[in-house]
Amino acid sequence: MSQEEPFLLIQGLKKYIDGRLVLDIERLVMEKAKVYFLAGPNGAGKTTLIRVIVGLTPPDSGRLLFLGQEISSQEKCDPELHRRVSLLSQNPLLFHTTVYSNVAFGLKARGLAKEEIAERVARALDTIGLSGFAKRKAWKLSGGEAQRVALARALVLDADLLILDEPTANVDQKSRKLIENVIQGLRNEKKSTLLVATHDFDQARMLSDETFSLYDGRLVPSIIDNHFQGPLREREGIKEMEIAPGLFLQVVTEKQGYAQAVVGAEDIILSYQPFSSSARNVFKGKVIRTMREGQLVRVTSDVTRVEIDALITQKSLQEMDLSIGSEVYLILKTSAIKVF
Image (cartoon, rainbow, N blue to C red; front, side):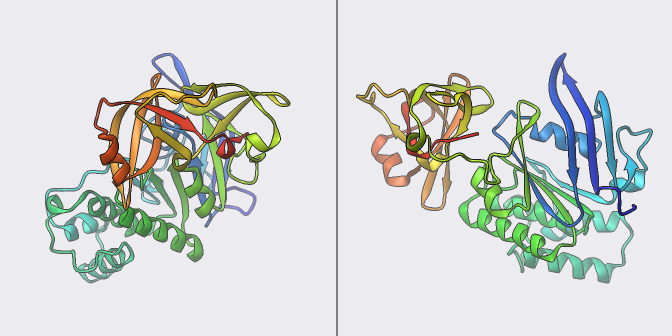
């Protein structure tokens, strides 16, 4: 790879699924030894883009260059390039064996010596906080532990490009923190290039060198890297607001007109009774999922076929007696809405 060639280059990429355009990437460039986040709400196209990059889904048009070589199709892609990419998928599966065997699998396939395999596995398990787990049965691990083992299996390969698809989406708070520490450590080491897909905008802001924001299959101006224009209430009034498929909000403001916006899960209030206000920032939904995150609980509600998360305390969850199917009202704190 010459100095002029980027580490990864995507140009004019289009991907259709069932006749619908799901990816339309005009240009995306990644440099070596940086941490990139691919941020966007659920359904934005993050996983599809990852599948295209790793060769699991062919694009319908466009060019992809990795380390200066074409990877747009299996015919053009050198098989050896796949050995230089490691992927942690969104819902990884572990083999029905020991933790050691799971982490060592890729190294054995590459024909490494037993001593080197043992050393690299031990180092990877230590990195993700599971030293002493080598002999544990994979099926006896908690969800967070299993996710960390899958991460170790990806880390141990020392790939040029490490791709993590929503690595902290369904894990406990302890595992989330450990995974974030691993990402920060890799960022400090500056050896591998990382691409991390997430719908957690705060996580992207905290851990990335650069963030690509994806919405409806297209790159949009970054809503992470200082492109926020400040809390909406402090700048201008909200004339209209609605939940939009694939994004948290669409708003119409007095000064800016039509805009798109996001609001964090911690800034959404849940109520089981109608909110006695004429404000346009109240929406009715139905609980479809709950998940503990340390001392808090992430409650996911379906609002007109759009999933919206809110973080509440366990005490609030019990007091409200929330369960799957419960009807709730979501109140968005207008001071926390950020427009891009």
